[in-house]
Length: 272
Ligand SMILES: [Zn+2]
Image 1 (cartoon, rainbow, N blue to C red):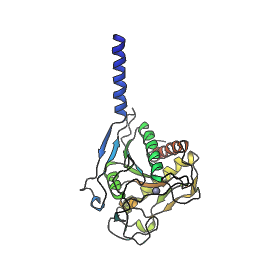
Image 2: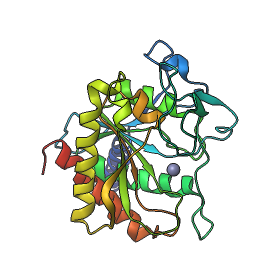
Image 3: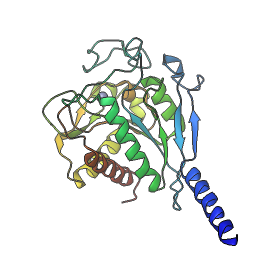
Image 4: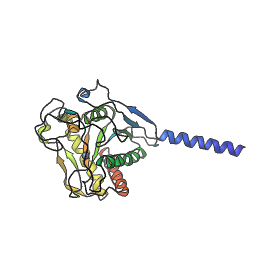
């Protein structure tokens, strides 16, 4: 009987530990937050996971699994908070004032949609960050989360210390990883003017982690791009492209990328 009680107690304890490790809180968009009024899709919730590591860092990383909002291309949002024109092309042409609230993303050459892979990497990255003592704000935890790029960015601005969006590019060259840097023309516009140097530092730190893990890097490792995320971010914020349509996205590769990005975050915050 005593043995049974000990066993029962240990089962209860391990269940409690497991629950504690995955302690999470839903966070929606507060429409009073700066720029929140520019969002059009914001009924979904981000999920904040709290680390259970003994060495807590007191830093929250917003992880943004790119794409994955049904109907995201049927609504438009302002490219820049002040309604000025977009400087560089991409999913939306230069000169546009609005762009897709959330684009659908590309499809890998093997038929896998980009949003499936960005979410796989986001979860692998989250696990490593939690183990390292970071808290993690998952901007898209589920398959379809009704938060547009403006909403995701504004939630990150208010509830995280930095924002890392995960993407693969739409080319078919296996060109390697790079981050989207701040175009010169945006560097005078707020909030970009006050924060863009930190975006670049975060991008370079992520490249450091990727290089250390032997991940192929495209050209200099960065490409200037006028993104909604960049235009609305008031915290260090980077869109990182981990490869393109023909790049490896096997489980092993995802694990390598998650580890490399975690090394990059440690580098940025001075823990390596
Ligand atoms: Zn993408």
